[in-house]
Length: 363
Length: 54
Image (cartoon, rainbow over the protein chains, first blue to last red):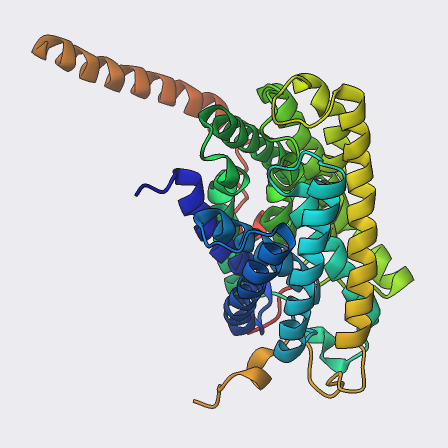
């Protein structure tokens, strides 16, 4: 039995998502350890829930890949809450999100609308980001004294940046993971994703130093360099050409850096929305950009056999899928956040961004 | 075949040395050489003001 390149390395890519979250100086064990716990729990739930929803409960490499995608959405949501939600709360949230994720993916995006989203821009990144942001909003503003723990050190930043570099390398395999049976589609996924990542990386480095008087901000480089991979997912198997893919990445990188620079402080100050990893800027805005771009990019390959409709109808369902995903994620994330995070057992006395309370650390 | 391999090796070394030297003279050794910037120390290129003291 042979397992294709994309299948193999999409597993590696999932494991690397936690590494980028290790930027918190006092939450390294939590970032890696809880990611392992939540990933396995979410994958187990997805294997059952998505199997029930699709009516296909047989185990295969495809069902494992789908479970990985579900876990990726959860880890994106975890990024908005990391350091503020307890492990038990995250376990409950993980189970709830696996249900809503599968509902949005199976019945809405691919069921009702039959939208194009090979790399999960809508179903994974958009859903995960807005679900996590809504849950973080439900949790409320950061008012604990331990808020000062929300910071990085040079060591944690270097570790996180290593994770970014490896994620960058494996990102194309994640986007092409479901296309291993079709050489043309898989090559389109890989090449378009690489071109888009090249665009977002260039944009992130240039804009970061431009906004910081000639210095790079590690947060921008750790995250915004990957924005191209987020945005290209909806259209990766379209024969759009390398220039179009590069421009998608360029736009996503610009949006992402501007988000970190302007949007995050604004959301904290005006709405009390504390997004620990800035998932709005890496996954939220770039996925909306990618979803909107997909409305136009179906023009490049409107005759493709994998598109369900003609040019105009396909563009309309792409737009509807974007709106429906955001609404589903925000509503389900807010309700889940209110029930799971904002309740009498909310562990108000537990310090935030400090994982020593969850690990044996006396020795 | 052996001669071609040897010529390719020599030509690659010559092309690399000449182009590298010229590029270095133009790009690195010019009036904007940043002589006041410390070597082997990257804090000058990264935002590090917000780091938590370990």
